[in-house]
Image (cartoon, rainbow, N blue to C red; front, side, top):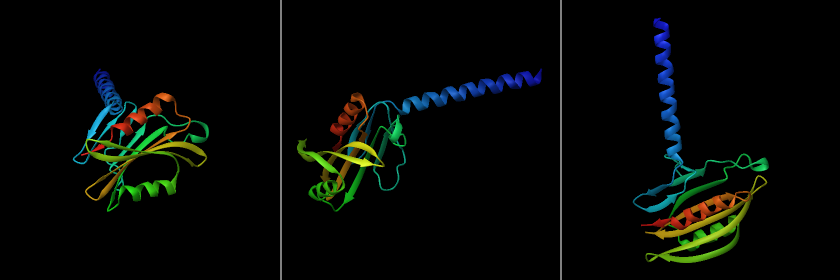
Length: 171
């Protein structure tokens, strides 16, 4: 009888823990406004914000889903924010142009701050990507938001990436 009671308690505890873990995982992929002292960006639903990115990244976000076939080792989309100390936007634009095939460049001004938005394409390990860059200069540093979307991604995912890029602002 005691074994039965202990067993029931153990099962109840496992069900509670499992439910809690599932709820937390679901919440992590919900839409979120990420705001720091330096920038603001809107993470769309279906993306996860890595809380402790590697030391080279200010921000590391990736989609829940992976590619298929030859692109199965890649996330459908990811976003990275880097800060380049002592750079200018022009230097960053040149660096992007050397790394990928640039399709278009756009200048925009938001709240008096100047941004450069670059749309490009690249190939990595046989997988094609659409890339978006949004560059902004602040106090002698350049912030580069880079979004990389698999070319096989659906229209909804591409729209989410476009909205995330558009939402990025420096303070």
